[in-house]
Length: 139
Length: 192
Image (cartoon, rainbow over all chains, first blue to last red):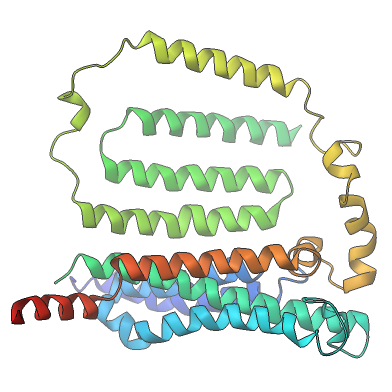
């Protein structure tokens, strides 16, 4: 990849902001627009920008492909696991009301964890898609 | 009033973009126009007070899809000439035009019976929407009703969606992913 100074500098400046915004969308999704899905996509966009500017190998050093497939599975496990936790507490599957001290706290915790699972899976899946497509053309 | 002006402007841009996409033969430019189309749709959703949907459309439609399509384009190598210039015309051009005109007018006729935008008595609003609006805040304590519905009331649906995304990633990995495994297969071929 050509050493585009301006591109690299702008990317280095923008990528932390994109990740910060993704985290804001992730954990502020209860109050403002957004949630796990959007946050995951924005989060992966930061890494895709990094891969586009600094090359695929540099990006794969930060997040190895093996981790990505594990992270994608981890998100689904978190989501499904939160549902299972409420079963021994006497609730229905995916009923968060019993996770906390009262209904509101339980719902809040459950939604937060579930959105986290969504975010992890979506971010990892998007990066898997990108790395698979972009890595295919070389060698 | 200002909403209508913005709506008409955005819809006019949407039509212009789609006509340009249909008429264009350069795949790279078409992918870029797809991104613009998604961004314009996101703008429309914002005007319709659906920031969550607009968010998704802008991030997925304009962002990730464009990157993925460009990556695919780099993979498949676009042809030197558009293929349809060489292929003989299979049928007369007025036949599709008639079909499109009839379908289009049927759809427009159908819109006459659609309730007005934001009509509180519309069938979509009187089923479960009222329950969510009244009970989402006291039951879940989450001010964003969209999040409450997606993550709590419709938790099963969202679990399914996440599983679909996971499955898509697994499918892509199995089909085209894993450069290392490709090399291994080629190495095995060399050995045998």
